[in-house]
Image (cartoon, rainbow over all chains, first blue to last red; front, side, top):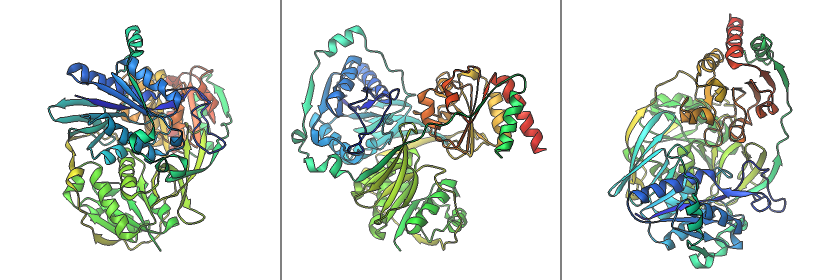
Length: 260
Length: 319
């Protein structure tokens, strides 16, 4: 079974994430970045499936030079090869354009049996690229999988929703997004880190994918950020130390604020 | 006036509050038309009319109800074409966002997800506000192509009543074979807790590592306030509370009137899910816990002592 995993290089949530003043896009250069934590679960699930059978795992990303770090981490975990789509024209692309570039890259990689993604990126958190990719590739989508199994030509997942726990079956090839409940991603081993240095990383530009520069980037975005404002930090309110009446004081606060 | 399509979120015909919020927002942009999928329209009609739906496109096609996401995107795309809609508003839950994503591609339209405010744009269209990077930035955006498709978070508008005709119009979409690739084969309903839905609740009380696995004081306090119960990632990873109750970056993002964090330190992962709450209260043994930087009121103390006392006082005041 051949699996493509889509990964994203994101600004570290622990750092001060911000926007570029000049064009209102996410600052991906001035801030430390890494493989989106939620994508590690997708890489892990792909590795488990291939290790249980045969085939190979290809990781693909769309992003600036630094995004190679995200691919490296996935290769160190055990992915077989990587594809890095980078092109200056891509800067500022929205989810619609990103899904177009990813879809064309996946077609060029070959027709995988399964495309796996994380449940969301930790920066944009839109959770829409998987559905857009499925739409573009004409694949059935099963998203937010907290369990996954393959049986011949079908994939079965469990999804824990608010109202119900559902079992969903789709025919292969299919696109699956996985949650952080599905597995425990491995740490790269020393052997994995050494092996990753020899694994192939292909770099493709838009021209390699037959995508025209006018279809991507900030100018082509179908939605536009007009402005961004940093929310003023919350002012710390009243802090009391419990001397036996902390609960009463809490209730008094609730009463004064008319919550009770 | 142009029609604005609102995808109705309902459980067996009982319309969720998010739908009345969406209908209220739709009236700012044009004339609200509800899109109702399912065969329980009779139960929903009154609410839809009360919040201003002039028309209701009723879809009873089994292909739409049996399969996931893709058929709903197809039917909405067909309705967008039929009505030349000014905008499409969809609830910002996981299915809603996926429907919106597919619809955006199908209709060559711009998409905004997780809006916390939607107004009519200066030159037509929509002007949306989103809260990003764990609530640390507020971003204003517009849709520049196609029919604006916006998914809207719960509690983004106060539902306002305005009588609408809710004129019933049956709509028969054409669903392609390709849209039937994924099917729900089994659905086990969750046991009802009797508490409000986490993302829609006006008050949320959450427990974390400090509960040591015993959520009973958290739940009892929540019930005294009619609140929903949430949990931190640490509590969920420890298996103390279900993942569907997780508040944070990888769980639910909530924005209630009041958020009470009990035994939660306030890591960025958690803050991402609750930082935009109107009023925040924390109870934690550790006075250095970062959660205290956010609070309007904080108690440094043992939640097992503070919460029962507070519960008793709240219940007494209700007399």
